[in-house]
Amino acid sequence: MQRRRFLTNSAQLLALGLVAPGSFVYGEGPSEPTGWHIEQFEDKGLAQFTYAILFDKNIILIDPARDPKPFYQYAEAGGANIIAVIETHPHADFISSHADIQRNKKAIVYASRRLNAGYPSHSLDDGDVIKLNRRLQFKIWDTPGHSPDSISIILEDNGKDVAVFTGDALLFGNVGRPDLRESAGSHETQRDTLARQMYHTIHQKFSALADDVVVYPAHGAGSLCGGTVRNVRSSTIGYERSNNYAFKNYTEDEFVTVLLKDLPFVPKYFSYDVELNRQGPVDLAKGLSAVPFLPDNFQPEKDAVIIDTRPAEIIRHAWLPGTITISDGGRFETWLGSVISPGKKFYIVGEQTEKLHSLIEKLARIGYEGHISGAFVYNHPGESPFPVLDNTTFSGSPDQYTIIDVRTPHEYTTEKIFASAINIPLPDLPDRLSEIPSGKPVVVLCASGYRSAIAASILRNNTKDREIYDLGKDVQKYKQKF
Image (cartoon, rainbow, N blue to C red; front, top):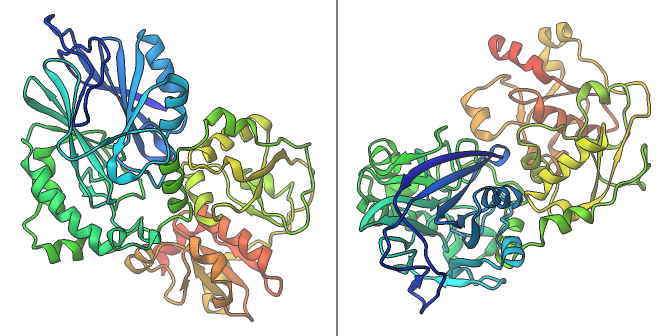
């Protein structure tokens, strides 16, 4: 997890104290404030940001990632105490450590009153203030749109708005998508309802802030909680006002149409994570310690789901039949959570024990460590069962093959590679196998070869009457030709 320091200014937190809801007071006194700053932590795999606001040896965390160790180390290095956590909303794409920190550091957790949290928390409402001292405070705004229970936190120093922590409401060049809570089934969680709320959040809340207010969201480029997000780590209201489409002079209906167009796919684990975050997940250390490590070359029971995380070149020489190939990569946990439904038990295979530990920690970030039946190293030698595609034959007669394009519908329509390809996005493939015609060998492709390797392994496990070929990285050649 990477760290970066941002704004610094004068402020001091004095004696800890708490008063009536609506005015949470942490310190006040006659002495001159000494200083404060914001530390940003980044989980690149999930494009997720955590913020630590440090003032006079005390820290408040906003949207902390699953592993609390970096925050503990940061606090210890500065001789500071973590006294509170603020959750902007129940996250869909990662598990927060709010409950873990609450139990282990006795920190207060703040969240929207609309959340109906299943863990001990202090409820926040629109207009509430958390006073840090006589000149520094947080102002709380309800900012629904990504979710009905989203809040944003404005840092105010000596009466001036300095920064806003927007959660997933306002992103870099975009806003949070409004379709992630529809499985809850209520009117307030439907995409049209939330999209209309987002319109008012942008034009009645964020538009009221000054241009120089710094924007710190919970996510950056690559996150599936929004559409296209700029690859930066901070912005300003002024920049977003001038460059973010959401601030344009749309009517409400026009805004809703634009916001709902070409939304990314929703991984299977998202609704599961929302509820787990709302209830309060188990401590990370406890969850990791419960994962069984099994003997090398273990043989799981028949019909078990087995995830092989080893590189393709290793799998070719030491194949374990019946596995789904999801090799380690920048978005390993996202793709596993997109293919494997929450609650479905699976085994995880790796090339070495140390690597398995690392991958299990990644899966814990999405709350999947409890679904692992066991982890083991597999190195039993064997011949590759995978047929090799003859590119000369395929290139000359692609119509002799059934071509499955597992990219997203947006990718498929904006960059056609084969006109005859059937588009079945990878997350949908296990449920749409019946749509693949019989009678021809199958060639699977994606944009780079990562998703197609996963898809080919799924098809090999479920298709016995034809050969399955993974076009892999060779797809680049065909992007030019067809």
